[in-house]
Image (cartoon, rainbow, N blue to C red; front, side, top):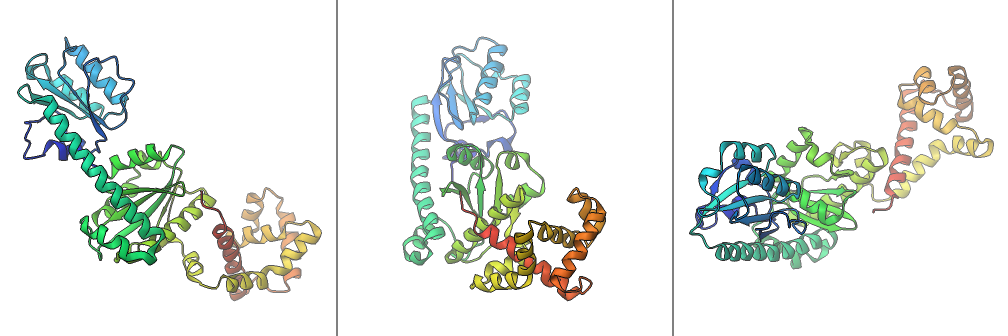
Amino acid sequence: MSVTLKELCQKDNNKYSIKLHCHQNLLDISVAWVYLLEDIENNDFLRANELVITTGMQIHNQEDMLHLIDTLAKRKCCGLILNTGRYVLDAHITDEVCEYADKLNFPLLSMPWKVHIAEIMQDFCMMLSQQALIDNTLALSFENALISPEYSESYIPTITQGGYDKNGNYCVVTITSKNSAEMTKKHISNLFPKCNIISHSNYTILVLYNEQITQFNNLIDNNKRELTDYVEYIGVGSTINDLIDLHKSYRESVFAHKVATSSNAKIQYFSALGLFRIFYETQDKSILESIAKTTLSSIIAYDSIHNSEYFETLKVYLNHGSSILETALIMNTHRNTINYRMRKIREILGKDLDDPQYVFNLMLAYNIMDYLDISTLKTN
């Protein structure tokens, strides 16, 4: 749970008289650290989500001001506080400057010259350090809740003392990204500043709590590209209402992530997995294997001996409403060939494909095989 720019600005009833020159909603961004910058061109060392403070001694005109804002926005800093009163006056922060910052979604703020920069930096950095310590402790406790649920006495007290209700609503989201774990965490923390984010097994894991679940779903429903464009795949577990069951939502999210990966879908909710949910809850997976083997063994054996494609042909045929034409199009094969294959498949199976119950059993067997294939996928 990172500290947001809004929280820093509101500290001790705005102790430092910070004035806002941008939209209020831009302040809901996480702050990694605070940095004093006077040499505008010496900015290569700035890191994402750093808050910059400057007296503006190198700002001589509006063009310099716009250049500074543009530079910091490109460096992905989380905001700029201008120490006004000597080099930069409030009058220099014109409507054009404010509109430019808003256009870049970049928080622009100011504080009066009477504020001691050393004092505000010490205060802000202390707050950030204390929160980082709390975050690390909570992250470790949440990680234990995910992977070592049997030791609940070691993590539940820490989590509840951190302000979480044992019987609150929780949902675990598992994410993979092409970017580094640290970059991914920073990006997501800007979208969900108060969300616990954990790195484990090359996953970035979000532990959503109460209203954060709705916020996440709204973000997905509104197709917010700042999340979906940044990640590869997302798996979402079920919402649970007991902290001791958090590991269940986590394991569901991992499986949902496997389904998303195998089907090349950006996001997969465990709650939308249909039959797969029943298979997932089946304790004895040998029962599933037996059903699939009993139903499809004859056609699998025939393909193995004759190097034919009857197994795949039947699967496509069943998945597309028993349509010869659609099966031919999908398999890029002449429909006469598909007709021949289907006649042969009926002979091999020795069953009538017009029997709804038998067709259901076939589709169930195919779904089981897909499920078992996905289940054996290795996590990253």
